[in-house]
Structures are given as C-alpha cells and as structure tokens.
Image (tube, rainbow, N blue to C red; front, side, top):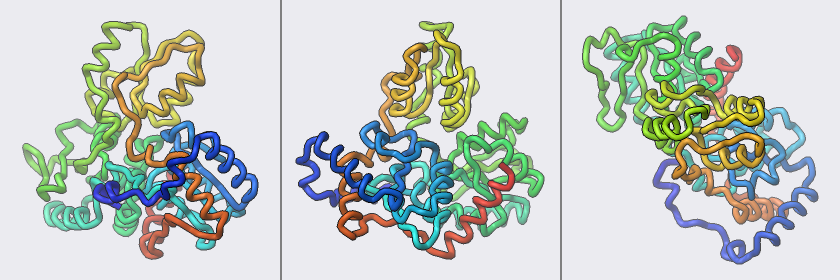
Length: 366
C-alpha cells in the first residue's frame, strides 16, 4: 500500500453510514459473542474509543502481532490498526488464520516513505560507496517488503522500546548502519548511544543521494529521509511554551519526535514507556505528553488525579489510523458472520520468510 491508495473511493456500503452508533455497537457485541474464540480483535493504542472498546487486547503494533501469534484458537484476526501492523500479524500467525484490516485505506505515511524499489536502489549505491560495511535495519513501522529486505541482507527490525539494544548489536556486526524509515528514531537512538550528529548522514530517496557535508568515511549512521507525520508536529516552541507557562510540568515525548524536541524534553520513550510512566507517577504530578492525540485523551481520562495535557494542544489524531472506525469494523465483522472475507491481508510467502528472519533476529536480542 502507498499514499495514493488511501484516497481510493471508500467501498463501505451506504447502509453503515446511515446506522446509529447505538445500533452498530449492539451489532458488534452480538457478533463478537457469536463468534467467540474464533475471533480475535487487537486494537492499537492510537485507535478511537469507539473501536478500542471492543478490543480483546490493546498495545503497540508488534506487541499485538505477538499476542495474535500466541492465539492459535482464533480463525479471524480483525486488526484495528494500520496496514503494516496487519502484515506483521499475517507473517507471525499460521496459514490457516485470516488477518483482516477493516479499512484498506488505513495506511502509515512513515512506512510508505520507504518502498522496496527505492530501498534496493539506495542499497546498490551505498554498496558502491562503502562495500560490505553496512547493516540494514528497519523500524517495525515499515512494510513487509522492507522488513524482508533487511532480513535477506543480514539486518533486523527494531522497536522504539528496544532500539538502543538492537542498534548496539548492529555495531558489533558492521561498521555502519542504514536505518529505515524513520530518521528521528534512528538519530535519537544513535545519539543516545554516543554517536555524534556529525557522523550521521541522510539518504534522500527522492534524489537517490547521500546528503552529508564532510568526509563520507566518517559516517556511521545513514538515516532514511522519513518521519512520522504526527510526531514531527511537536516543536521546540511547544516545549518553550510549557516551560514558560507551567515550569513545574514534566514533558514526556516519543522518540519519533525530532532530536531538538527529544533533547529538551524531560523523558522520552515508546508508547508503552509513556503509558507506564504516567501510570506510576505520583498523584498530583503534571505532564505534557508528545504523542498521538487519541492516546493522550485516553490517558487524561484514565488518570484524573494528575494534570495532563498534550504538548501540542492543536495536534490532530493520526488520520490514517482513524480510518478504522465503528462502521468499517461492523462491516468487516458482518461479512465474517455471513461467510465472506473482505480486506484480507496476505503477505507473499517468500517476503514473509525473510521478514520473519529480521523480526526473529530482533527478538533474540530483546
């Protein structure tokens, strides 16, 4: 899936847009009860409450795919997240299990910033420059094809939780790394491991060139020019405003934010790290959170004993994640009930094998 696929005409039948929310909620619960253990419904932390209420498990993308892998009873895995997450679930689950994405337009702009053709061209050129001194690694927020590319070339995947450990391992294998597709997570991780910014370069897939001033032999980290459209919208000005108006407020951000924002924050870490930090914080503490708005609102509602705000009060939820809504969920479930399968996610077997190799390398280190 790429960015253009998101704008395709919605194939949701009109009747679902005419139903009341109460009607749809009752129908979803009824189908869930009827299907029982045949159905597993994972819901990502960034999903809307109207969807999360039905989740059998909530969590980060890889965590949910691993839970799905452990669930051998479910025939149908209706993944409430985005396309690359459903791909990972298909890679990890059995051939007999069916993975469904309620709305095929639910993509990820970051994942689509690195397609396999761009990556193979980049790899060929980088091999000409550096020979066999680079290890490719990709954030799990990437397509199955990119995961497979890394697996096939001795590389691995990383999560925002284990990035430091996995990147440290990578440098025991090769002199340099190519980090796809999120430049910010790559930069923040490498910097915290002691690699200076002067030893990091950008690979621009639009121009097929290495962007760097200085001696290319000094480069240790090659960062793909990609980013999260949500987290890149948290700015230094947002932090300066909190510092000026609420100097006693803690600032916690996701490492998909820019280096400048992460450097000025009090804490940074994965989605789970943010959730657990707020959960374990003393009552009465104050927090500004730099991550997706649906999750921030849920955290605010969960912990009324703490003062919690979004670091950027004008932040929108993740628009592509929000493609999964109550009407699309009900439509997918009613089709299962009627013996039809819509929006099945099926990863090519060879791609899945290489992608799993990259995932397994990471999991042995985590």
